[in-house]
Each structure stands twice: as structure tokens, then as C-alpha cells.
Length: 520
Ligand code: HEM
Image 1 (cartoon, helix red, strand yellow):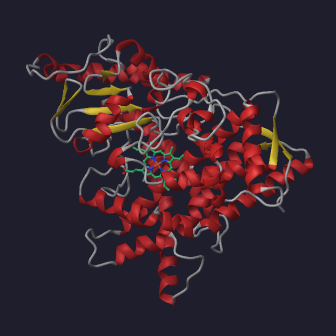
Image 2 (cartoon, rainbow, N blue to C red; image 1 turned 90 degrees about the vertical axis):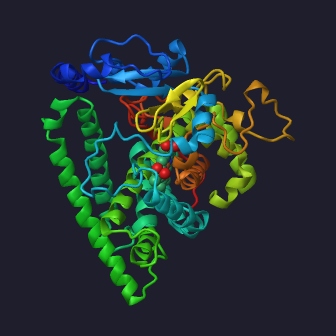
């Protein structure tokens, strides 16, 4: 955490104490009058007034939660301030109970940790309560927008974007310059999602994808800050730092840009142009215009959906790829093994392709292992919609919030051998292999609740296939085409960022690419 972050959190902490004292007298009754016989999970010692809030202010929140679970157990109750209580889940067996057995009792994402601010009021997919609207959009995602046939149809987009990435890295290599892999990977995933969503790169304005990236980044950051504000109690609502105003401006910019792109698509449809093929906007507009659709989508619903797809789909894949490269650079044996696998399947005349991936088990294992150790979505939020009991504890409709720490589950020593080590071999499922995989070997069949990078149950990530496809093809190409030398050292510093959901690397990944195979 740098000094300005520390000062900012100190200030928020101070603000919280004052606002909590102000409201304490009003909420005291709530605690003292509790006469229910509900069986709550155990709770670690809490500080007066703030409860366990100080744990959220500490550096890496999923990591602090993990330390708590190791001390107090896999199911504990935590309190933030005087009014927000939630249960923290840190074991895969309990996670399985929730995401599988009790999936229908927890079908809604808890939104108390989000800013709640949205110019598209009522139009949200990611935070929609379980119901007709959410079901309709989820079905649309799974059957059309992010289906395997739509992913296959857009293969040329990913191939072209990977080639563009390699081209720019070849230039760095030729000049002996270093590159910022964090930046170029973010630009690439952004282009892939923008082109798949709205064919923006191919429109007349080449800067649209960049513009969307900047706006979405602003919306994400400001939304995060507002979310923290919201947890600060009544004083947080005054928007002292002006985040709400800035968020409104950023969303307004997004709205104007997407409105224009929507109109362009509508015009294109009228003219009967096929353009780059059917993108996600075309599919959404078809639903929007369908008078017989189960849900009548509004223009705002369409825009809000795209904003959330950009928020959910760009940085996640890019951050995961940065970690994959960092781990591979720090583990030369794994890098060599991956390169050898690619060379043996692909040969030395062409670039690795998406269609090679089924024959590249070590590449798939590398991506899985990266997502296990460095998941971009370390915490899953759920709200109880039916009274139920889990592990002998009671959960109440509309009152019980769950926070599943998938970061801790994926590093649980009861589920994984050497849980903090990068060992792709643990995901190799090859019974004919003569290689001794030893105790790291594990078999993942179907949905395994030890491995939760994409969450699980009905609220699980609909972009999992797309994200895995992008990651496998990109990492494969980066390993096939270049050797990598870290700028200013032998090894990459694997420190991660701080905060509730901050899962990015603490420092940009600066490396010299050295050409090994030139596909051009
Ligand atoms: C490495 C990349 C990605 C990771 C690690 C990731 C992870 C996650 C996680 C952990 C969740 C919450 C699941 C739960 O609560 O059980 C989620 C939800 C979601 N993700 Fe992803 N995601 C990635 C990429 C994508 C992409 C590429 C898209 C779309 C283009 C996407 C769209 C969504 C959406 C729409 C939801 C909300 C689903 C719902 O509420 O039903 N994600 N993702």
C-alpha cells in the first residue's frame, strides 16, 4: 500500500468511526433485543463499534480472510460496523453445499459491497436478483452471446488480435526494447471483447476500443471507491470525494458512445450489411426488437449489459494472463516443458492455434494452475432467499449474506498439496503418462469445488469458456514465439495488489521479449 492509499484508508476509517458513533444509539436496540434462537456460525473477537471492519482495511482482503479462517474455522460470522453481518466461507465442502446442494437457496448475488450507483437504474445483469429478467439474460448468454458457436464464429478476431500483439512484441524484440506486458495484454483483451461485442475496431473510428477501455476503467475504479464509501455509514453518503458525480460523468460518456454504436448497428441492419459478422450487439438488438420475447428489453438494459460485460470480461482475462507469464518466467522448467509440448504438436513452421489446444494438456494445465493461484475473482457473494441450514447453522431469507473466499479454497492445504506453489502438473490427467506426477496429481472431473476461479452454481461465470480460450491461445503464442528476460532482475516480483478485490500484480510486468520463433 503506498502512502496516499494509507492516508486515504485512515481518513475513511476515521470517517467511519464518527458516523458509526452517530448511528449507534439508533441501532443498539437491534443487537440488544435479539431474542431469536437462530444458530449463527462462531465469530472471532470483534472491536467495539467497527466489528471486524479493520480486517477489510488491511492489505490483501482475501488473504486476511484466509488467515482468519485458519484460526477460527471454515464458517465464521463477521460484522462490519453496526449493521452489516455476513458469513465467511473458506472450505470447499461448505462451498459445494452452497453452490450445489443449496444453489436454489442462494441464487442472488449480495450487493451490499457494491456502490449501487447506476444511471441505468434497475438495469443490471450481474447484480440482478434471481428472477425472470436475470434468467432471460443468463439464457441469452449461455445459448447465444457467449455460446461455443458464437465463440467459434469469432475465432478470426482472436487470431488477428494475437497476431497484432506478436507484431508489436517483435518490434520490441528487434530494437532490444522492453515491453509492459500488463499494458499490451490489457489492450489485447479489450480489443477482443470490443470487437466481439460491437465490432468497434473495424468501425471507421479506430480509437473507440481505447475510449471504451478508459471509460470502463473509470467506472470500475469509481464504483469501487463508492462501494467503500457506502460501507462508511451515513457520512459516506455525502459523497465528500465527489466519486458519485465523477461516476455519473463516466457513465454518461459510456452512454453516448454506446448509443452511437447501437444506432450504427441499427442502420447497418436496415441496409442489410453483414459487416464483420453477427456480433453481440446484433444479437442483443434482435432480442430488444423481439416483440414476443419473454422479457421486453429496454435500451438501457442493452447498454447496461454491455457495460457489465466489459467490466467483467476485460481486466479479468488480462490480469490472469499477466500472472501466467510471471509464473512461467519464474519457473523456467515449466516454461521449457510448455515450449517443448507446443513444438512437438505444432512443429516449427506455424503459430500455435486455438484448434491445437485440445492436444496441449500442459498448456491447459498451466492456465488452470494460474487461475487457481491468482484468481481474478477471489470472492463470491451470495444472499439467502430461502430459510435453510448449512453445517448446523441457520441462514435466513433476505437477512443472511455469504462471502465465499475462493482464494482461500484454492490455496487450502486440506485440498491441495503445496497449495502456494505453481505446479501445473497437478492438473495433468493422463493415465498413460509415464511421468511421476506424485502427490500433486489431482483429477478434476466436471465441476470440482476445490477449483473455483469462475465461481459456481447458477451465478457462475458465463464467460469462462471465452476467457479460457483467449488465455490458452495467447499464452501458447507468447511461449512459442519469445524467450523472456525480466527488466531489472532475474525474477518477477510476484507481489499482488491490495484491497477487497484487487488481484492484479502490484507492479507492471516489464520484460524484454527475445524472438525464438517469428510467425510473420
Ligand atoms: C479469467 C477471466 C474471468 C474470470 C476469472 C471470471 C470470474 C468470474 C467470477 C468469479 C464470477 C462470479 C461467479 C459467482 O458468483 O459464482 C463471474 C461472473 C460473471 N462473469 Fe466472469 N470471469 C472472467 C471472464 C469473463 C468474461 C470474458 C466475461 C464476458 C465476456 C465474463 C462475464 C461474467 C458475467 C456476466 C458474470 C455474472 C454472471 C451472473 O451473475 O449470472 N467473465 N466471473
